[in-house]
Every structure is written in structure tokens, then in C-alpha cells.
Image 1: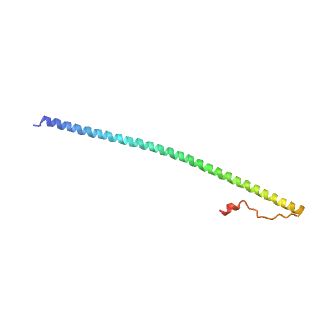
Image 2 (image 1 turned 180 degrees about the vertical axis):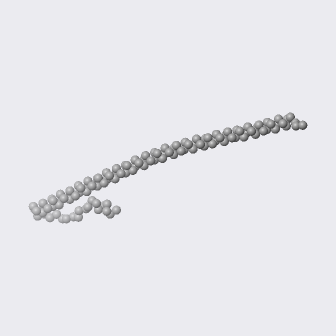
Length: 119
């Protein structure tokens, strides 16, 4: 006949093993839930960072275009003022030459666009 103590020990051992397996499966499920939760949080953070980067990139492109437009406008204004100044200088030189016979030494006039062409 089967000994009662051994039977109780066997049943308690089986219950203990079932309880251990049950507890381990709950711990595993909790670990996977935390991993999924952290993964979702990381995805949200990455998405926010990408959106922020996209906004900054768009802002940078707009600012760069604006600065290049301003620089182009300033170059055109400088070129226009320079050509008007050269015209006035030549007009004054001609006037001095006609009225007094004074001849101004001619110096080469620098073209404002030469610097752009050299690069």
C-alpha cells in the first residue's frame, strides 16, 4: 500500500511545482508587458523627436532661403549704387577736364561682380 506521507509529499511537491511554474509565467508576462510599454514609449519619443527635427529642418530651409534672398538683394543694391557712383565719378572727371583741363589719372574701376566670378 502507498504510504500516506509519501502521497502527501508527492501532491504538495506537484502543487509547489505548479505554483512555481504559474508564478514564473506571471513574471514572464509582466516582463513582456513592461518591454512592450517601454517600446511604445520609445516609439512615441522617437516620433516626437522626428516631428521636432522636421519642424526645425523646415525652419532652417525657410531661414536659409530668406537669408539668400536678402543677400542677393543687398548685392544688387550695392552693384546699382556702385554703378551710379562710377557714372558720377566719370561725369565729374569729364567736367573737370572740360572746364579746367585737369586730367584725372585713370584707375581701374573694380566691378562688384568680379569677386563672385573668381570663386
